[in-house]
Image 1: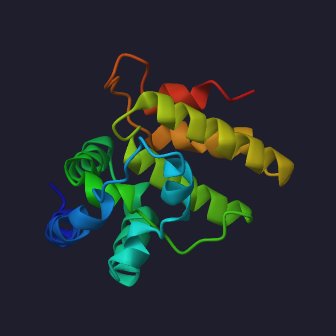
Image 2 (image 1 turned 180 degrees about the vertical axis):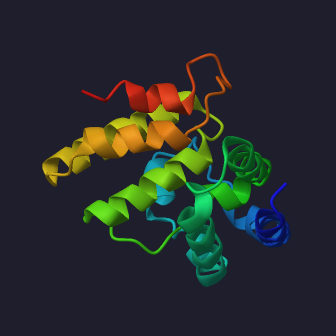
Amino acid sequence: MNNAFERAFEDWERRAVSLNQKLMPFVNANIDITTDDWLEKLTRRPHPADMSGLRLPIETLFGEIVKQFEFYNSEQRQQIIDLMYQNDALMYAASIVADRNTSGGFRKYMILFVIADQGKDTRDAMLALESYHVDAEVLGFDVSAIFKEMTEIASRQDKFGWGSTRDLFLKYIK
C-alpha cells in the first residue's frame, strides 16, 4: 500500500468514525410517519451537519477525500467507499463546499456520489443520479463527458443486484 495513501486513509478513518458516532443521534432522530405532516417535518428539518454543529469538520473531511479520490487506484478507492458505507450516519450527512451550478462543482458532487456507492438503496441512487443528470443538462454541462469520467473511478461491484455504480453512470453516456 502507498504510504501517503495509508497515512491519509488512517486519518480519514479516525475522523470518519468519530464524526459518525457524533452524528448518529441527529441522523436517526425519529419522525412519526403516521402523522399527516410527517413529510413536511422531514423536509423542513435542518441538515444533520447543521443540527449537530459539525458542518465544518464534515465538509473538510469530504473535501479532502473528493480532492484525492480519483488519483487513487481501484483498491484504494474501494477502501474509501467501504469506510463510508460502514459510517452511514456520516455518509447521510455528507457535505462538501462546491457550487453544483458550475461544471467543476458539479463534478465534485459526482465524485461524492461515487464515494457513496449507492448508499443503502440502489433505487434512491438511481433517482438521485437521474435528478443530477437533468439538472446538469439544464445548466448546459457536458454530462456525458463528466459521467464517462465517473465510470473510470466508480465501483464495479453490484452490491444489491441492480447494477454497479459504474453501470448507473453508463446508462447516461451517449
